[in-house]
Image (cartoon, rainbow, N blue to C red; front, side, top):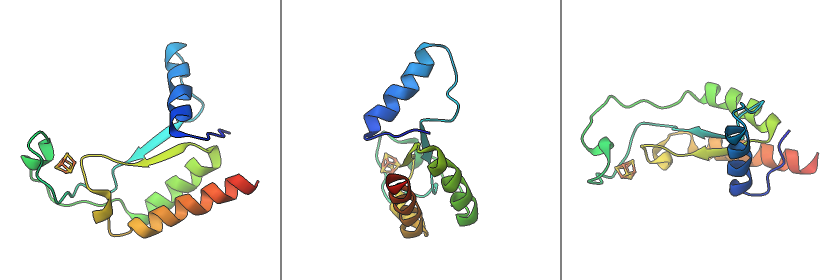
Amino acid sequence: MYNFQSVSEAYEESRKFRDLGQTAPFPPYVTFELTNCCNFKCKMCYRTYVHKERKDIELDFLKTALDEICNWGSMIRFLGYEEPFLYPHIEKAIEIVIRDRLRNFFL
Ligand code: SF4
């Protein structure tokens, strides 16, 4: 189980496996694109020019995934070609991560 104290430690762990040509037993960090929705139109971003039907991660799937990831202590990022605060369950998602981080902290 990982016990990262910072995001850079998770990146270093990931690079360590990459440099050895190995695969980590579980990803040191996991990125979720919670929605494909964004309320900006930045010129350099493909999101501005590609129009897709809105899709959000199912909350039940997210809960299951976060539980497994938190058991490993991986770092979690909500990031992508999106605005994560437009995800309708963003408060719940943050709550799950904080709850599990505190759980790991006190174990
Ligand atoms: S996803 Fe990010 S870069 Fe792209 S339009 Fe939205 S805010 Fe801009």
